[in-house]
Image (cartoon, rainbow, N blue to C red; front, side, top):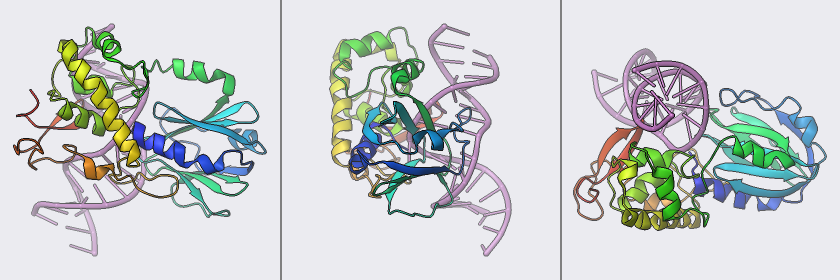
Length: 273
DNA sequence: AAGTTCACCTGATGGC
DNA sequence: TGCCATCAGGTGAACT
């Protein structure tokens, strides 16, 4: 579900719970993503603490607590963090419920591809270093020369390389399709064969499409919503994602769909060479 | 070892 | 109405 713009939107929408105290918490389903369980002491360890800050790291939501612990949330494909009225009754896929001073924060995730973790705040950098993620797609360090280096020697299609979080962090299927279309780059192009000129075009376009989506509150295809329940309106601005057989917005040639790395890939074979 | 494929899980949708 | 196949904003393990 959520790529960088959706996660960023959620983080911003959680502003109201900053400085609120955690009254208590409940976990209804410890087993989420394979190989990742919510720590058994999660509820005990966060009870009575105050939320000091909430930030986004790549597609992760990072919630700092006053006791030097930090909650990590990844939304997977179908996860939501939602702010509800107090005494909210958990729903079928509510896995975590946190009662705060003035709200109840819940984590819903039907497919359970997401992740909720609790770590020591001073180990955050280690935690993410282990994932060997690339720089954030919106960071200044994400520049054409950085991308050039990262694509060095990669014969895999550029579409797949950009989905790889070790190359650049934050992109997902929607925005890679959109950015490659806007940059007129064929998704199957071997990553290392892109020229300096291509990358100088592509990088700003990636940032631009992400920023524009954040302004629209992200893209809601199905499950995604902000923590106040509102959907993302960038879906209305999508140019190629999900547009198979519809006319290309530039040349009217039908948009095609191919599978790359097991993911649907939408593009215009006339515009993207 | 880079490049693929597949599994994880639930729900929605469409064809028959 | 029901049953089956297919597909979905992600990730990482297990293949070649």
